[in-house]
Length: 88
Image (cartoon, rainbow, N blue to C red; front, top):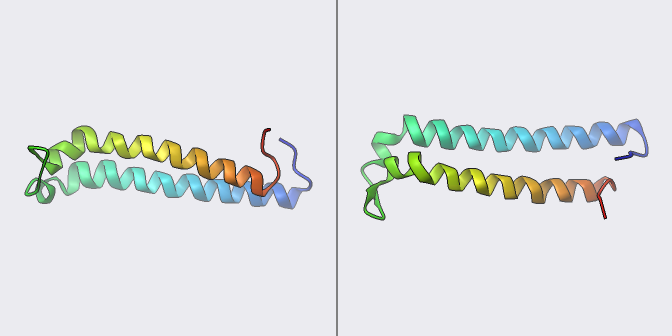
């Protein structure tokens, strides 16, 4: 990866860090919020025959985590192209 100048490199890493931190915030909200804090509220809703809080803590959070991986890959590729450091 080769940047044209130092400002471009700093901008790239600033945007990449912002992306990572926002996805980590979503991960924390889903795992801690839905799996622990809001479990009683979510258990009042039934989903596929299970209480939603239980389902979310056991499987729903994993679906969100996998989705976050794909979102990061797509956004990181777009960021690489924006700063012209992508791989062809």
